[in-house]
Image (cartoon, rainbow, N blue to C red):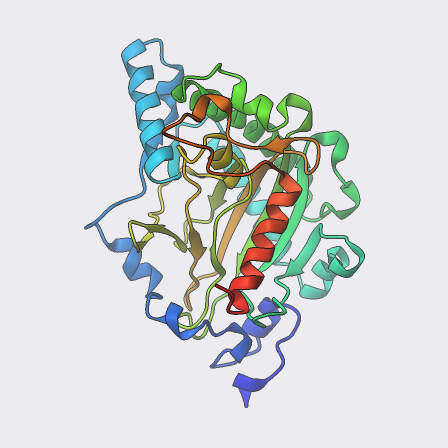
Amino acid sequence: MVTTMVAPSRVESLASSGIQSIPKEYVRPQEELTSIGNIFEEEKKHEGPQVPTIDFEDLVSEDKEARERCHEALKKAASEWGVMHLVNHGVPEELMDRVRVAGEGFFNQPVEEKEKYANDHASGNIQGYGSKLANNASGQLEWEDYFFHLVHPEDKRDMKIWPKNPSDYIPATSEYAKHLRGLTTKVLSALSLCLGLKEDRLETEVGGKDELLIQMKINYYPKCPQPELALGVEAHTDVSALTFILHNMVPGLQLFYEGKWITAKCVPNSIIMHIGDTVEILSNGKYKSILHRGLVNKEKVRISWAAFCEPPKEKIILKPLPETVSETEPALYPPRTFSQHIEHKLFRKTQELNGAK
């Protein structure tokens, strides 16, 4: 039976094999299935809460009132949602299109060509082409393949695993990373001011100009014959300081807001930005790292480019900043390195999967 077959190592190969039903490893637990709907129908809904849109042009406006309005909107979105559409963000539309074309071009190659860039978790080589490994506790798999690599700073890149084809992949991705690094400074500066901190405070706390890393993960979600049973990415919060997401205008992102799954609209020329756990910790929970997931569909391939801005793993102790803590608002998070925070999340997830309370 197809439903009990062992899945190939790549979801793309599985999706293109002509199967009518998905292997059991990809079927989500019953309690999740009741909330998985048709993503195209979900995206059309206009009633209920909507992911906020922030016009970043106002952030650098000469009009003081426009700047203040933008800061207030940003603070509200970061505090209530932890996710937003950024428009007029300063990344050229033409460059975003080049990044999309290059990423799609890589995934449009035969699987055997992409395998030349395969990662190897067993040897600790996590950069490259891969698919989600099964969680030992659940055996659960996600309906996606991906390409993952560090894109900033330049001197830490491993160019051996950057795709040579398409030929514009390296130039486009490199330029995009520079723009994202600049955008990161703008966002962290504004978020600092909104907390009443010095403008450079949050950026300094996550590694500053020299230590902050940007990791790129291109998520490739093939068409799925039973999208009502699967997830592209299971529910999680990002461990990063900030995450910037570009996509190919196929809906899929959902946010868990006020007890319900809300579907993000596809906003032309926008970049979706998440507040990650790191900034939530530094702000003592004043900014939110929202639970989110990715849905799949049977009609269109979805691709997203997620750029994770992360502090160095061991050099910095993450804890609520003193200015965010008081007698009435005690520290909500214990001091941890970024590496320890990741281990804590993995341990807690394993405990939950094992039925621990």
